[in-house]
Length: 251
Image (tube, rainbow, N blue to C red; front, side):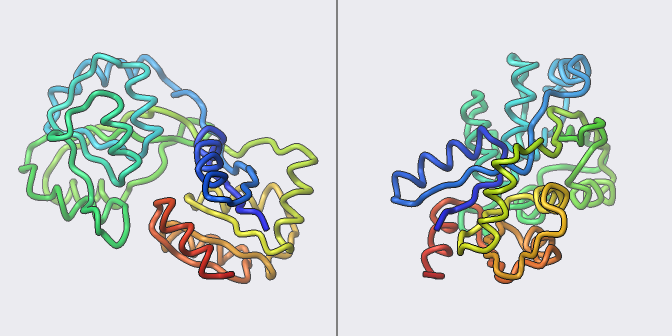
């Protein structure tokens, strides 16, 4: 029985390698495709002034990679990361560990709400924050609205810039057939994005998911997967060990 990886291809391949090392069989069926920023010049301009902000919030590892690809010499006073993957990407980009704020290692979830518990005392009214985020295929901003609302409520000014785009991939016929088999053969689907669940409904319209299993890395993602009709949906933290433990517990 396969473990179905739905992350963007580059991320899925990294997970696949680690799963094989653990004796698990991965099936790569990406449900998101990461594209370049819609306005690289705007991203470079944001990088040039990054040091003027009280903090820079990166919504994901993709945001970090997209930002520093266009602004490799950018410097930030504080960098906010909603989870360990984003934190690790910041470290790889050369941001000093002491400048990075992230949820506690034992946080129940890695998300904006957990991050806010760590950083809400760092800023004062009038401070400016830059949020580096993703957009859809048309360049419209996506995600982290809750955090923006918290900042606005504290009198903080927020600028945003898009470092990448996310859109549904174009599956081959072989991928569609593999997806339909994985809906009924006992495979476990791993979801790390609500958008991925929405894309699955588009890629496999009319599919019966009542016999399918899934692990979701956040309650909001689990709700999106349950809405598709998956017969079993478990919620776990996003780390590989947590995901594997959940998969093993179903055997």
